[in-house]
Image 1 (cartoon, rainbow, N blue to C red):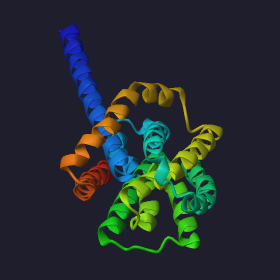
Image 2 (image 1 turned 180 degrees about the vertical axis):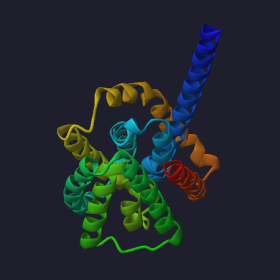
Image 3 (image 1 turned 180 degrees about the horizontal axis):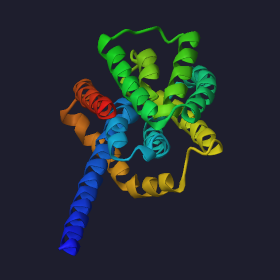
Image 4 (image 1 turned 135 degrees about the vertical axis):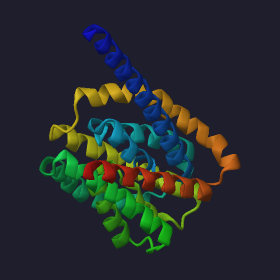
Length: 253
């Protein structure tokens, strides 16, 4: 009798693992598609759901996957890259990255989950409100610092930069954001590795999830034909907020 119950429990656990894997794969696919379409949002869309499935994948694995997308987008849109804007933002990113790594060391996992959820909701709020500070050097540096802080601590660094650059054309926005995130993400990964916040499991998950990430990037080319970036952003914000609220609810329970 005991052996039968143990077998049933093992089967249920296996089913849950398969379900979690499917949800995780689809989430990364959709997030990569969003990032490639509008230039940011992979962490914002995926982080709350990934945190529910496996908190250990944040921020390391998610930053690695986002870096893969930024490389692909940058290769495609390199002619539209604004080096001046990306340069000022990177100055701020260095400072923010150090602060974000410090948060990872000081804040326990539960507190980090709440911070992640709040970062998603704050990013959604400023995006919906449509506030548009001009892309001056000072604003770009401040946005870069905020992006480095939240990007390193929670893998969600897109909203501050998107806020300043939202007046740019689609190609310029994607290229400049990707150039900024490529350098910034590499710096974040180096800092995370130095502080012991990246482990072998992060690398293994990264390798496993690369195929769905690349598929998400390829799908963005077709998605944009029938779902314009504005609609895609609205849908993604709604899903992100739902995931963030679900994450907060889980922590409270």
